[in-house]
Length: 129
Image 1 (cartoon, one colour):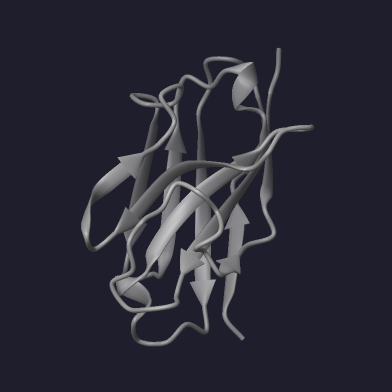
Image 2 (cartoon, rainbow, N blue to C red):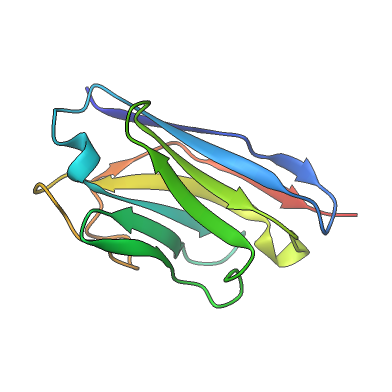
């Protein structure tokens, strides 16, 4: 079965950096055409879209609070998606998920979670002094 596995989370001080990875396995040959998004969920809050990559356009960062600090990238050869997070702040704390929209090839990014049908288990990011 298709699978996404996140890694790279952890505890970091404010101002620090983390690079999250999302490894994909058992996807079909259209994987590189699927939109892949990063989402996060803080305790007591709803899940929110952070950034997304698709073949339909440039990488998109949805949250104004992370623009200029977070970068999404992709290595199609490795079937991996990354989220580079710099200058982390306590409000970035949460569980980070990657998700794929595999309902059709060359799928489009979306800021909300409902179009994404394959999810990883999440990786915890804690920013604290």
